[in-house]
Image (cartoon, rainbow, N blue to C red; front, side, top):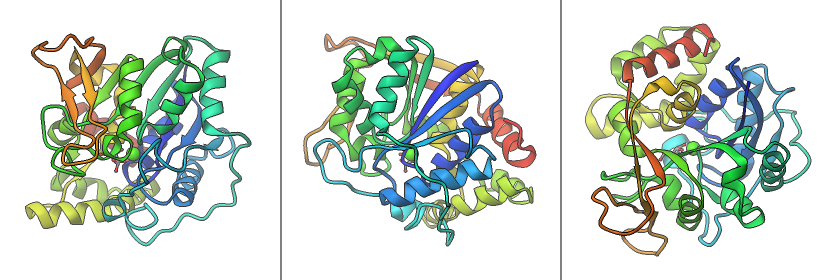
Length: 313
Ligand code: BDR
Ligand code: CA
């Protein structure tokens, strides 16, 4: 069984990735590690625990608290997308579950050191925890089985600014280090817009599901749907973190991927967080980032529906 550490700024679509990973029989979800990002840190921690509780996994999957700010920049949240507490609507998670003893960064380093080549890292928030883990253990990449990252906007527009995707924008210094030091498989924002977005019909079908998971999904995606409806006239919900976890779990989802040199602009200014991608091999940067170019969108929808309507990842 594959072992997985999920690093998350749990709010909105993160919860769906947590749900998928917690419910999947084909992996052992070793722990959640929480990183500063989407919403105030305490809410992220509670959202993670609440989601595990919903998946009936709270007793099996420890939650470790990690970096509360980016490496260099001040923290900025995405409460306008996920709501003040991060669960889309009025729901404020407030569990009785204690966090695990120890720091998320220690957990990442120690888990990978104890089992070289056995543990996959799935990163669906800003990359601060992983960058800090790399400072402690420069061989992190060799110690990991695979490293999956949701972030960046490859050859397309960003979501947080025209130039940048949220996770890379929040901690561009960390993203730069992780892409430089690790063989990452990257699920970028552009792919998620193309192939990882549920349209009005799909959302209506999921809303009719009437299961606890479908109701939870309706709740967490509420704010994002309204935002998209205001923008385009139709509700839709992009699921970057769920897509990342799904691709890790179901490699057949990935129908096209390409190894490219990817760098991140860490400077303040218009292009902060921009992901520079050397498609034409113009620089001598090493093409070590495996960029997912295309996925089987129907299969993704099926995986999400199976989980939300039948509780079966
Ligand atoms: C990323 O930003 C967050 O709001 C989402 O959870 C996802 O990880 C998308 O840009
Ligand atoms: Ca996230």
